[in-house]
Length: 100
Image (cartoon, rainbow, N blue to C red; front, side):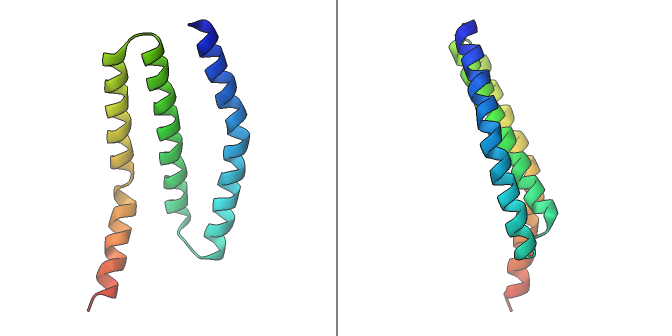
């Protein structure tokens, strides 16, 4: 169990260097096409929550705690949906401006 936990933490640490490059790319693109920085920030946070939630679910399943894993998964989904409300509202406002 400790070996898989250590391996998972090591892999997650190695992935963070790639994620920082993706964040920089998204920030540069947002500046070029004038997307609100708030939306990019929310998207990055939502992606981080999804990654960490999946990591926590995997750890719970490795420990044999499938009931806890399903609740962690559900909690992550609820947090993601609640954080995406400003993006959905902005999208709906844009659609309403386009419609006659």
